[in-house]
Image 1 (cartoon, rainbow, N blue to C red):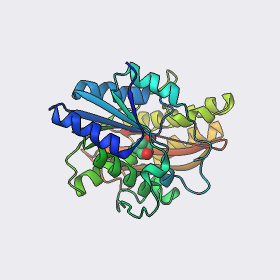
Image 2 (image 1 turned 45 degrees about the horizontal axis):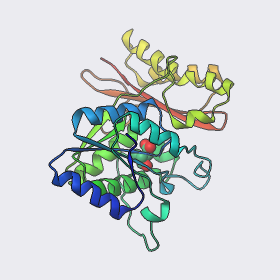
Image 3 (image 1 turned 90 degrees about the vertical axis):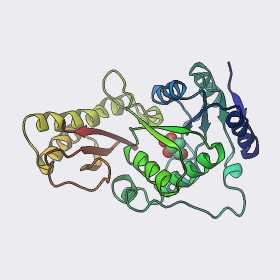
Amino acid sequence: MAPLVLRTVAETVAWAESIRRSGRRLALVPTMGYLHEGHVSLMREGRRRADVVAASIFVNPTQFGPKEDLSRYPRDLEGDLAKCASAGVEAVFAPVPAEVYPPGYQTYVDVEQVSQGLCGARRPGHFRGVATVVTKLLCIFKPQLALFGEKDYQQLQVIRALERDLNLGVEIIGMPTVREPDGLAMSSRNAYLSPEDRQRALALSRGLAAAQALYRSGTRETSALVGAARRELEAAGLREDYVELVDATSLTPLPAIGPGQTARMLVAAFAGTTRLIDNQPIGG
Ligand code: PAF
């Protein structure tokens, strides 16, 4: 069945309230649209864990820098609604920017520590925009749970921190990255890639696999593990933005992987003008 399309905050608050009053558990999947299998996997998991799934489709202007791709970010509401329908989503909140940020809007959410490095250092203000809109969505829907992809791993840690620090009482679920058969992490931004850049982009997942293979062969030092990933990016002609090995929860850089340590490698690189990210646990 086609999902109910909610355009205003007031309608959405009322709809979510009616779900709560009926005693049903609500799962929320926040998105910026141009949905792919990664988003659909979040919706399906939401259905499994709750009675009702809602999604939001909103290209959030506050998380884009002045030189970023806000105006050309891909959009396809019709196609997105069809995907939501097939994934069993009951309602979709698809507001215009002025509904979320009306005149006089002045409140922002800053998550201080986990926002700092990695993408936070390269995209000033990005996580402030993400944290603000996610906080608003959680306040509007008051869902029992909300689902996010691990592809945006730092984002997931930022959202876990804001939920905890603001006592929002929402279970935050992180779901594994969904990949194309050749390993490329699914992303709405893959739509920007030329066929050549699409091929080059495989170096991100190959680099992470190379680091993991080196770990398995006994290497524990960050410089060597990062070097293995970096070589793949260089060989493919990608421009590195960063390759870092960090503690999986605090995201602080690690000099080496100690016994029992949960480490994660995160990479960002440009294929042509398109910035792509990927990450993977290293260890185990
Ligand atoms: O991951 C995304 O698509 C966005 O950053 C999110 C969480 C929907 C906030 O705009």
